[in-house]
Image (cartoon, rainbow, N blue to C red; front, side, top):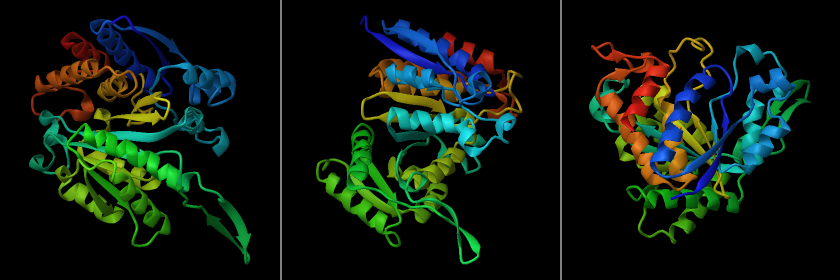
Length: 359
């Protein structure tokens, strides 16, 4: 295999550069093992972009991201920029990337490697070897619906947002859910609030219609409040969950905490074109930035997702995930996943080197 791929790296803010360095090293090593050449370039987004250019998403950054095969992001934001107007804050850079790349499908795995079961707030037997995939629609729903705003009515301010989904938006994300369920355990749970919301009634109707094209996948429906309860009651009942923007935002964070640490969780945001944005679920953690304490495994596992979903190199993804699993099985832990039971505590750089050695 002599293929070449263009990867655009955006370290971002806080611990971004620290977790990105080992992830890129692992990415390069996995490419060499697979006979693939990577062209890796780096750019600015978020707070560091504001400091350098005055904008959270410079035009050059967006253009380079649009031209790449995949984008790897370290995270954006931090207290340094909290006092900026909403339209100028680092997070607008991330939203602009999502919009500019057409990233409509957010994939959030809730993975719990067996050796980390004790780190969860749930009983180990409920979460050991947990493997759920939550698919969140990313470009529609109440976060983007119009009209929206705050206005004066009857001598008081009133805030309003609009929850809206078209049939085509629902069908597009439903097909992503069914396609990925086919590659896993062939079970898809669609989460909505169809007992209250007309939008959810349409959502359920469209998902049922799309299901006819996937007769090998078992489809179920669940109201969002019950889904939240079931995630903390019996999480292993789920395989793939597909839902709208706001519900997915909430449920994926609930599922993330089943694993005990955000430092272990990767994510992918995909476009219809195949390009993807890959980033750890955790934030920029400015309180530990520069101290070699951050867990790089979520970013490394995001690289594995990049190989699987954008580059079509499942073998490279498997290698990376196996290397991470090996490190954990041998007892190596960063501070966020160390339960204090005689584990081998390591820092950011050392954990990256351990994963690299096991490739």
